[in-house]
Image (cartoon, rainbow, N blue to C red; front, side, top):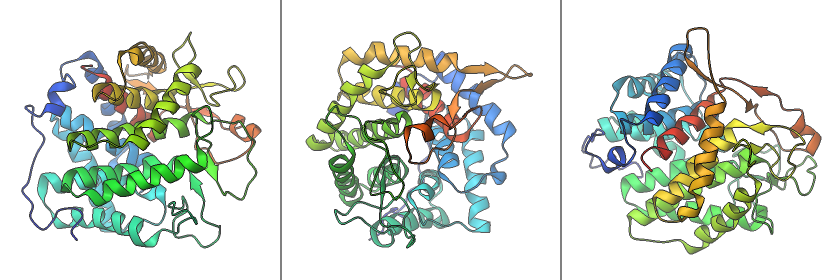
Length: 368
């Protein structure tokens, strides 16, 4: 098989005539703000300085979409420099968290047909298909090839490897990557989704977890990735009732947990007032809900929650000394743990995945 479609490749660049661009209102104020946030990130973080990791991969994914809407070449040039740097110096795809940069490689391959970009996508798909360890149910272990721990599922994996599967399936027209996402989503839901609809952080992890603790960003990764997958299925004239049903249950609980005053979500969703309100989860929920609404999986009743979430995200964008927008209020990298462990994660500004989440939210909600 040829997962990246590199056998018969016609270079295809984003166009202002694409439905993707037109639907997302390139001239909107939301896209203008996304551009300002992206421009500051690019100015402050040289592409060649960034590691091959999930946070940086999330920024690159967001810039892929921003470039599709704007055709502003510096966004493509930035993720191309990032990918080219790692092609030169080497990269490893050995865990779920090392998969996200492959989405940028996929976009570059679509635009250029250059074989090295296709090879990165092939590496990611081969890792997911053949190399990652799996739980007894067949779930892809968050720690990938590591022999140090029993295979464990972490909820954020659904976004980290999920976007690669979904976009590779969309690009190639091949069902197997989409079928694998569906399979993984159902396994994760069966082991992590609780009765109210929210997802726990991890399954079969060595460290203790408190029951009844629902981490916002983890749930938001699921919402964003799940509706991205359903979007691609819908474009093929297909549905996935199991995934749509699990997301429906999750969204009902997500909407109930939104803070009505700020539009933000608490970092532990079902413990309002206990820790802090958090930016990256809110942005990812906004992006996921907007995708669900745009593609007909959610109805207009979610619109007020999306608007409120976006207002919350905007309230967290402050200006630096040069008047440029900085994303604030992002919880730091978060491991699985007890409630006190989540409380100990500090809020920070200008973190890669928080910036990427905000860009995705601004792009995905524009033109709705």
